[in-house]
Amino acid sequence: MHTSNNNTGGAVVDNIIPFTPEGEFYFNKGVRAFRKREFEKASKWLRRAVELSPKQPVYQCQLSVVHTETGDYHTANQILMNVLADFGHEYVDCYYLISNNYAHLGLFQDAKKYAKEYLNKAPEGDFKEEAEQLVSVLDIEEEEDEDDDWAFEEEDELMMHQESAFYYMERQQWKEALPILEEMIRLFPNFVSAKHDYAVCLFFAGEEQEAIELEEDWREQEPLSLHSMCNLAVFYFHQGKTPQSQGHIQKLRNVYPIGEQQKLRVAATLTQVGEYEAAYDRFCRLEKGKLKGHLSYYKWFSIAAYHTGEPSKALSLWEEGCTRHPNLAEQGGPWQQG
Image 1 (cartoon, rainbow, N blue to C red):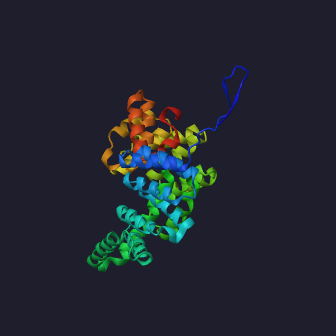
Image 2: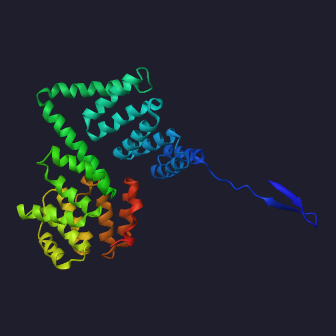
Image 3: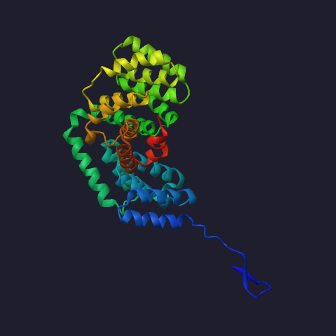
């Protein structure tokens, strides 16, 4: 700080050097919050640290651990993959952390692959015992299911694709989901929902007409398809084609699926097309315990609640959703939508 004297003999500040926190400042705040198990705060500070110091991989690794603790395993792995791509051999612990996340997701082939890669690259590493134990457990699983190896691998691969597409769609990253869904359609042609999810991504990525044409073709082949009803109701609603949209909405009002995933799809669709009362009723019937992993559950339920005169309920749902799925906060609150 530089000072000079004025005519009255007092000190006048010529130049103040402002305090500008750097990445390390926010990293330390994030670590302190993490140790207190204040994961939302930890994520916030660590994201800021990464923004300010993108070439500090340890900040990214710590952020991935926060996501692992909150059950957001795909986000954790995406961060770790980026670290490996940018810094490679310097951060071999990433291989074990990735394998651990895959194990939590039930993607055991990938978990084993990355655990072995870790042991290969760091035979005396800090996670040696954990990695060996994980590989041992997965070897036992394989021995017990020896006759079902092919089915296991196929199911594992399908689940991996499905989880990846789900990750991007929940975050409205439509273009990122498209190539994954294209591959799913090619590899697993009998997995029907992939093609309908593909149409959704295509529509919101800007290819509206192509998405509608595809969905209309599929509806002709399967007139009672719940996927087609939901998608076309939303597509036509967004295009302002009320008569076409209403035709599908009326059908959905009379559909009561058995599975929770299908129930959620109908409730979310009714919210998206402005049928808030009907949507809110459907959401209240859902088994929350089975849907906590779905960002869309909290998003559309809170919006339906807000528009049916339940602002406190909407806020409570939104806050819980943001705690479980930090990316939800980026999509704007229920009062900003609908």
